[in-house]
View 1: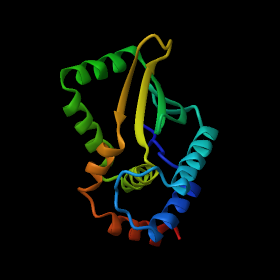
View 2: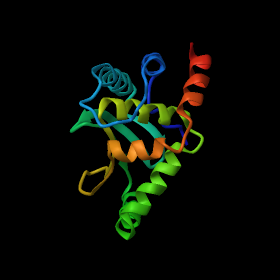
View 3: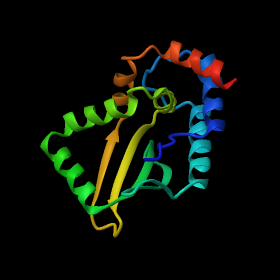
Length: 167
């Protein structure tokens, strides 16, 4: 299985530079224009690599910004999509918590993306559709969901490690 790349190196370096010089308070705001520009750069560069086959049954089709969210649009098979829809219907809150845990566990890059999204006043959305686009599922993580998750991590330490690694 190919690892999902949430950002490009160029966008990550831009984000590291700005996050290093800003105080990350994670308060609701009107969106930092520099952080929104970083998201746009990441989207443009990620789309240059799309579609990306991540697994036999998972393709990253495109990435875009919409309704104050960074949206990852995936195509998958009917069986996988049906299983995810069933899980979400059983317990939407538990499903989203499981999704956040799976995304963030051991993945500092996604934590930095989440920090940039919060500063830009954006959330994340993962849209999964079957190949024929007759059935779909959206998993939406609001800016507040991301803020709450980030409180579990020492972002200063993560930021320092990334600055040392990338700069």
